[in-house]
Amino acid sequence: MSRQYYIAGNWKMHKTRSEAAELTKSLVEGLKDGKHKYLIAPPFTALETVGAIVRGTNIRLGAQDAAAEEQGAHTGEVSVLMLKDLGVQSIILGHSERRHTYKEDDALINKKVKLALKYGFEVILCVGETLEERECGQAEVVCENQVLWGFAGVPKDALANIVIAYEPVWAIGTGKTATPEDADAIHAYIRKVIGRLYGADAADRIVIQYGGSVKPENVTQLMAKENIDGALVGGASLKADAFLPIAKFA
Ligand code: PEP
Image (cartoon, rainbow, N blue to C red):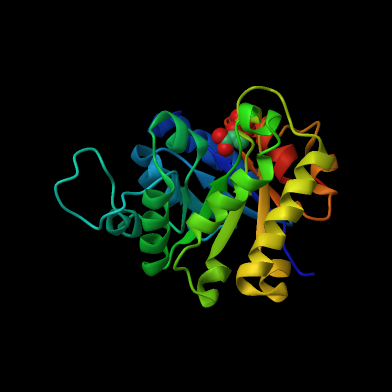
C-alpha cells in the first residue's frame, strides 16, 4: 500500500486577504520540511493572495466549491475556468455545509465532480451521515449512496485525481470526533464500495481523509488506523499553532 497521508485545511468563510496571507506564510515556513501531502482551501476572495504565497511550495491551493456550469447567468457562482485562472489545483465538493445548509443534492454534486475532473482539478469529495442517520444504523448506506452518486460516470483513469473525505456531519465543528475505530470502519466500507466499482487496485490506492473535529490531540490515533489516509480540517486549520502539529503528526 503506497498511499500518502494528505492533510487539508478548509478555512470556510474565514480570513480577509491580509489575515490569509499571514496564516499562509506561517504554514509555508512550518511545513517546508513536512513529510505529507498538504492543501489549504481559503475563501474565493483570498485565493489569489494565498496562491501567490504557496506557489512553488509543498502546499496545494484548494477551492471550497465550484459551480456546476462553466459560465453563464449564474449570479454568485464561481466557475472552474476562474479557479484555473487563479492557479487552483484542487476543489472540495459535496461538503456537508453545501449539502445540508445550501441543499446541494447528489446529482448537482456529481455534475460538479465531472466538470472539475474535465478541467484537470483534483477533487476532494466529501461524504458523511447525519447523527439521525447514524442512530438509525444508516451510516454505511448513506455514505455508499453519496459515493455511488459522486462517482457516477467517472472513469477509472480519473480516480488518481479523486480523494474522498469521510466527514460525519455530527462531528463537524461540534468538538465531537468519531472514534478512530468507528471512522476506520466507515473508511473500510467506502474502500469496499470503490473496490466493487473499480476493482481492488483502485480501492487500495484511493486516499480517504477523515474530517470532523480533528485536533492536535486526536490526529495521531486517527491516522494510525489502516484505512484513514489523512484529514480534512476545519476549525483547527485557522491557526498555525493548531494546524501545524496536525499536519506534521508523526
Ligand atoms: C470540515 O468542515 O470539513 C471540518 C472537518 O470541520 P471541523 O474540523 O471544524 O470539524
